[in-house]
Length: 396
Image (cartoon, rainbow, N blue to C red; front, side, top):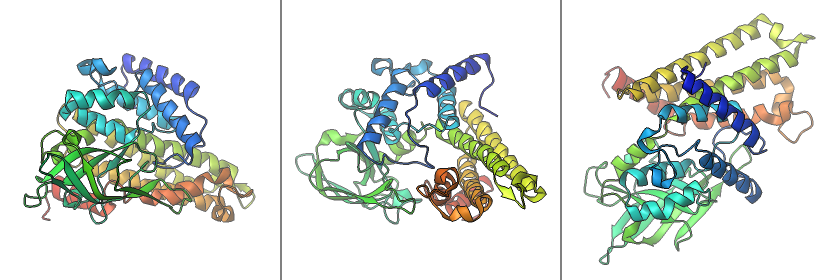
């Protein structure tokens, strides 16, 4: 199952698939959204990002003066690229947050901001982090408390704390949301900023996770002063800007569905290799039935994703499509990873460097990370509430 079946898209998909196979960096695949573990890996990811931009496989919707195709860009191509990167188990471009800020700058930024940042994003030189979530303000982002106070000379003084910041330890710049009008309704008093991560008062503290790596960070902002040119768009217009830029991320949801299907393919292979009572585990009817169930759920997820994308392309997005897709993807990911460890048997308790680790500890990494998806981007509980209220019209 894949998105789009036109001859044009089929040819483009074959082209992208060949490109990814030939150019993807030799980095050991890891589950989820991960940061570089060291500067050597960071350099590989930056080069991979630069290569994808140079080939036109990302950034296609950008204005022509900055290397894109402008209004002639077909968003279906973004979906295909995301799917093929996921299918190859290649790393995603390091510029996740940079893609969001690029969308914000293209739609709302000044020409000076566009000229200052877009070329560096495209070349892979600039790494951005997303400074949205806060302790207690993750799923309910509009309740954020970081303050940006306007000074008499037009500058802003920013104070607060952000958390779950991917690539914060490597970022040159941040895409920040802060409250600029504490008396306004919570959605209306927020502004968007660009912030230099080397400024005085910015303190990045990596968070060591149960995967053993530090993919997220806490970021403390202690009286950080930025110029008026750091403001994106209108003062107090940050909520609209943030939602608009997030809406540009069309390929992520499709690539997530491919990632789940790819994991289930590998799960079937694992069931053929491990033994149950001296026979391949897949010959056990109970295990075969469970694999069939997981596979059916993965195909249902893909069908939901593609239906949602079709509605988006027609300008008629479903009100509960995004929360349904996110909920199904994250919960299914936990099921797949847990079943993989069951298949590994006693070897499921060891990790990558251990000589007895199955598939070099790949499934342990999947299991340890999978639960994060049920929280990141809106917890499963929040997603169920959104589906009930927006999709089914139930009371709050």
